[in-house]
Amino acid sequence: MTLYIGIERSTDLQRPDVKISKFQSRRRAIEWAREGGGFADPGAARGDLRPTLQNWHHRHRYVYEMPTGFRLNRAELNRLVKREWQVARGSIYMRDRNQIEASLYMDAGKEIDVREEARR
Image 1 (cartoon, rainbow, N blue to C red):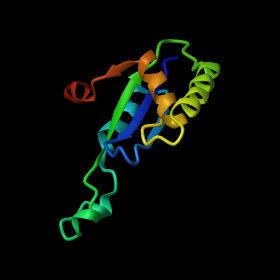
Image 2: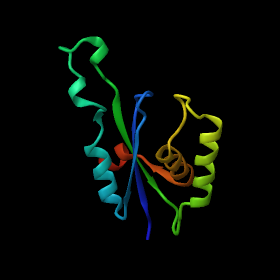
Image 3: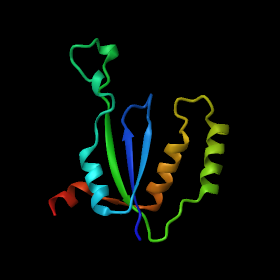
């Protein structure tokens, strides 16, 4: 059975939260990607707020098809998380566990072009 990984990322570098979703159905993964996105903080994307309170960053969703039988190497994930804490501790560029896990999925999987799939 093929595993599909959905990754939702924000363009906001101060709060670059990453959400990971797993799907067993290609159709459901593509539906998830197409229905999401939008503003990272919908209530703050308004013109009537002071510019310092506005947040116009967006969320983007990507879908990756993992190779048959793929399993995330948890030992490698833990090693990378530990290294990140040692190297970049306190840096605004430090990645959290979800960001590192998402990068491992993105490296191992094949990205599905959701726009192309919608045309089919």
